[in-house]
Length: 518
Image (cartoon, rainbow, N blue to C red; front, side, top):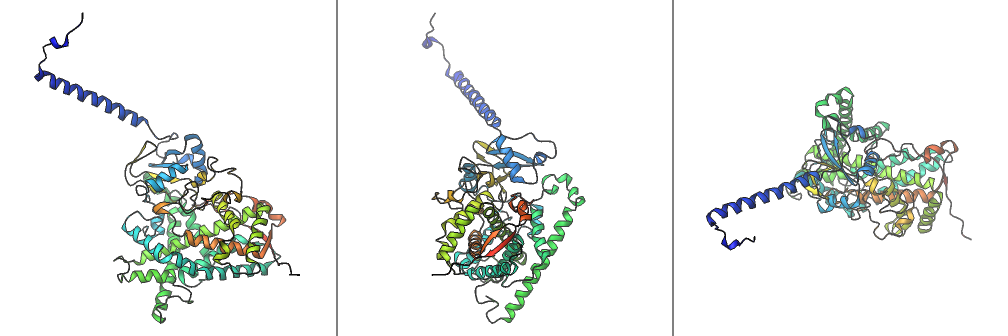
């Protein structure tokens, strides 16, 4: 029997609250289902153990461990480093989300007890938390220390120091030379002159200090990840190593500042430009310390000056030295690439020993070789980790505030989705790619990072690498001693925050002479 709805006795006073209650129930059910769906959309993550989380799944080479895990869990995965949640990014698309689309959200650094100690409570740029201090330090660095004009003023220093290197190699010929050690000394000398105004007597102890800092920054202190086990850091000797390294660094920087203070009092020009070439970094920083109104009211304290100087040494030396070392290792291993690079350099420069900006602009193949080496051996393969300042989403996954973010540029740079023959050293790929820039706009290739946290020293590093490499390829033909071929061709990496080559380059250099004109 059909029901006539119009004949039902409806009492609106009763039906309104009933319908309202029914609507509320429906809304609650829908929201509950949406919440359940959202909570089920969990980040892919390998099983974690109590207390240590996923630390047992990470080896000494973090980028390789992350790479292996990403093969099983995808381009975004969650790990627990002890009690600390961290996500690992292994695709260009997600890297763009972190370093561009949501750059501000991911612009701060996670706390690090070791960086905090070595860089004066993180008063530097690389490890400083995002905020006013970081913004002012970055401004000083970009505007005053590493501007295009400032970097170009360093060209004569780079040229002179590289020429001294060539002389040392020529004197040692035909005996093998430890090119790795010589390049590190060269890099130290260049940075000494541009940062401190003159070369200091940097013995093996100083180089060990730099190496130790790299090892310490690449370590996993229990205090940071499993606070209840912080006593292990003392028992293992880690705390003592950090303290000793800091004391050595601080002692050196104190001497540097004292030397500059004396020269600024004695020199008529205030100690500026001790060689008449440029104003060195320390002078610039000390002038900012005066707070004369040119720095927007921001005054650099002594610890901030020390932190920034030390960062220039630690980051600059590693980036330049390690990149040149890898380039030469790859060239020695690939003779045909070496020949092409040498032919181009010698054709462009001729017998001239001066590497000008105009000449470098004509060396497309040399630049391709450098880019290919940076693709295969990025100096910091997972970049310096970031931290989410607010709750956000990536690919539909909720990322809580305080989550650490590692971007594995090593994996992205070897992904066949973006690169043809990714495991081959093939510089020609960059001759055919118009967007071969590595300055942060192409997220399949960001060896120096991108966004607010991009390395501010990229122009200085690039200029130094190009000039030194061009001179080495121009002046010598290179060969490997018979008893050292295995180590030279071994592309294994040393442990540390960066991807330094495990074995030094011991090579023979044969001075090159241009054919006589007929």
